[in-house]
Amino acid sequence: MNIAEKIPDQDGSHTPPELARDPGHAASAIAHDIDIALAPIAMYADALLEHEPLSERARHYLLNIRRAVGDVARNAGRLRELDRAHGPDPQSAEVPRHPAPPLPARSLRVLLIDDDPSLIDSLRSALIDEGHKVSAANGGQSGIDAFRSARAAGMPFDIVITDLAMPDVDGRQVVASLRAVSSATPIILLTGWRHQLADGVDRPLNVDRLLGKPPRIRELRAALAELTGRRTGDRPG
Image 1 (cartoon, helix red, strand yellow):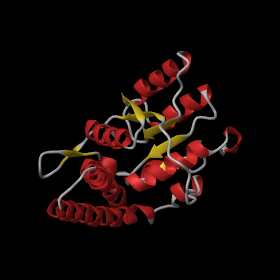
Image 2 (cartoon, one colour):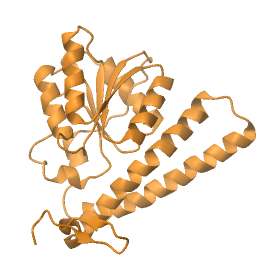
Image 3 (cartoon, helix red, strand yellow):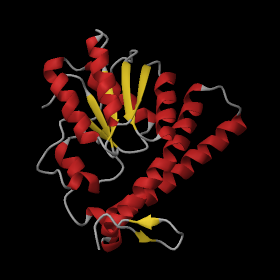
Image 4 (tube, one colour):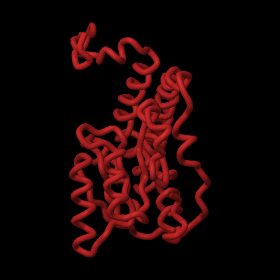
C-alpha cells in the first residue's frame, strides 16, 4: 500500500496507515486533536474568570467548566504516555523549563502563527485581554511574511508564538526562517503532540520555550514576562 493511501475508519473518516500500524502514535495523534478542541474552551473560561465581573453562580459554573477541561486534558495526556514509551521525551531534552521570575507586565507586539482558526481566535483574545497588540497569521508562510514585513517597516515584533504542526510550512521551518532574520526575537513553540518532535531529537529547536496546547493563561503570561525581560545577550542558542 502506498504511504499516501488512507484506511477508512468505521465512522467513514480515514486514518493514515502509519497511525493504524502504530497504536502509540495513533493515541498521540488523538490526544493532539483533543488538545486543539479544548483550547478555546480553556482559554475563554480563563479569560472570563480573570477579566470579567461575574456573579457567584457564573463563577461557579466557569470553575466547573475549567475543572472538566483539566480532567479531559489529563486523560489526553494518558493517551500520550503510550507514545512516550517508544522514545525519549524531546521536549524536556531540547528546552529546559525554568520558573519565571516575577517581572512586571508590559504591552508587547505579538505575532501569533497557527493554522487553526479557533485556536487563533481564542489565543488572540486572551493576549489582547492581557493588554498586548496581536497580529495573527494563518499558517507558517503567512507568519514568515508578516515577521519580515514588520521588521522592514521598522516595527518588529517583541515575541512570536507559533504552532509546531502546520501543513506546508510547519513550525520548524518557521523557526529557521525567523532565526535567519533575527536571532534575538524570543519564540514560543506550541505543541500538543510529542511524537512530532521525536524525529528531530538530533536537531534541537532554536526556540526559547515549549508550551503545551492549550496553554494556560498563567503559564503564557509568565513565559511572555520572562522571555521579553531578558537582555538580548541572554537568549539561549
